[in-house]
Amino acid sequence: MPRIIYITSDEQRFEIEAENGATVMETAIRAGVPGIEAECGGACSCATCHVYVDPSFAETLGGAEAMEADMLDFAWEPAPNSRLSCQIKVSDEMDGLVLRIPVRQS
Ligand code: FES
Image 1 (tube, helix red, strand yellow):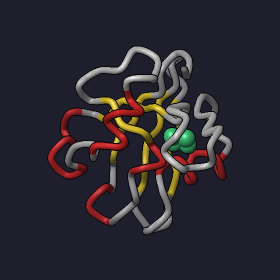
Image 2 (image 1 turned 90 degrees about the horizontal axis):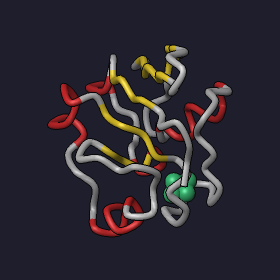
Image 3 (image 1 turned 135 degrees about the vertical axis):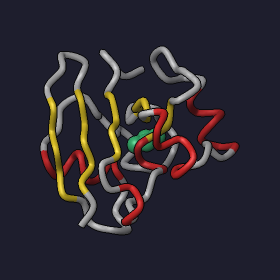
Image 4 (image 1 turned 90 degrees about the vertical axis):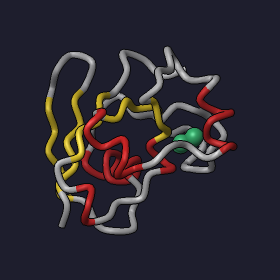
């Protein structure tokens, strides 16, 4: 199972074994990682699951699709490496993926 690493805004590190096919949002919520609110439950309509993707995984993950990119406009301090964690599905090639959680959600 791939390991996903979440780093909170106060530098707490959570290394979680994730199930393939789950989203990294679901993985974080199940594991009790703080800072991801996911108010819409993964419907890509709240932007409260915002994370920053480590640049070394940019190519593996690819970019946000149009609907996600539109929602990211509502995220707290979006950056070029911003993604909505409910739109990232875990797969083996994501082993070691590092996601930073912003200081607050929108
Ligand atoms: Fe609402 Fe991701 S959980 S946009």
